[in-house]
Image (cartoon, rainbow, N blue to C red; front, top):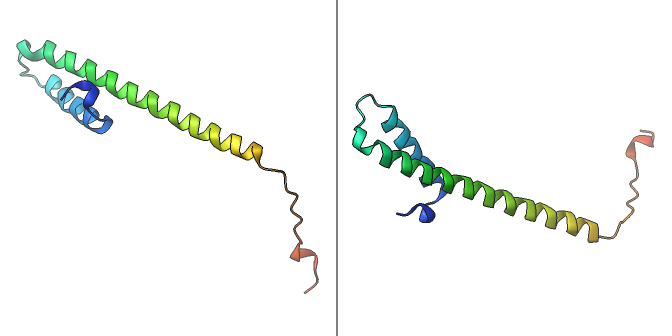
Length: 86
């Protein structure tokens, strides 16, 4: 699966597995560069997914703010039951 096709959770899980492998004392030096390169790709994917989510959330919140601004101000008079004697 290419880095661009993987989801955030899967990318994070694979990154955690790579970290475990890199921390092992008996890591094969021949695969070290490959693992680090894959980790860099996955970090890029995770950052991209986080940035995309941040943009989407900001757009949603801005849309909510816009909807609130378009609503007419309605004065609501509330009667207070606390002022009445028992």
